[in-house]
Image 1 (cartoon, one colour):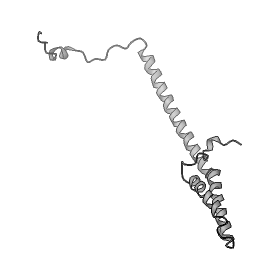
Image 2: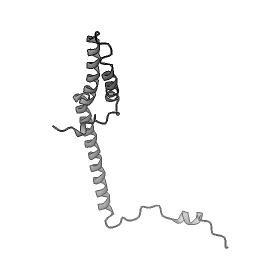
Image 3: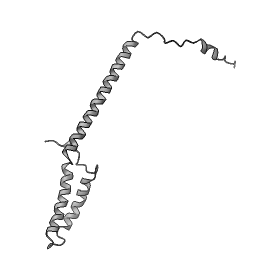
Image 4: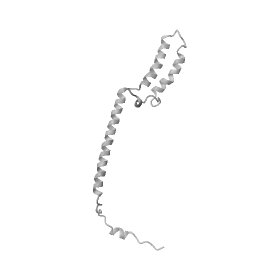
Length: 120
C-alpha cells in the first residue's frame, strides 16, 4: 500500500472564505429564524398558560374528594367523641373511613382528585 501524502500542504491551500450562498439559502435562513421566533413565542404563551392554570387550581383549593374524604372521617370521630355513652359504636365506620381520609389527603394518591374531569 503506497504511503499517503501529508495533508498539511493541501490544508494550507484551502480557502476559508464563506462559499457563495445557494439560490434559496437566504430565504430558508429567514424562514428558520421566523419559525424559531414563533416557537419561542409559543413557549412563552404555554408557560403563561401553565402559570395561569396553576394559579386557578391554587385558588380553587383542594379537590372536593379530599375535602369530603377528610370531612367524613372527622365527622365520625366527632360523633364518637360526642357520644361516649356508645363505646365502640362508631369504631367500625371510623376504621373504614380512615383509609379514604388518608388517601384523599396524600398528594397524587387519590384517583378522583383530578380537576380535569370536573364538569358543571
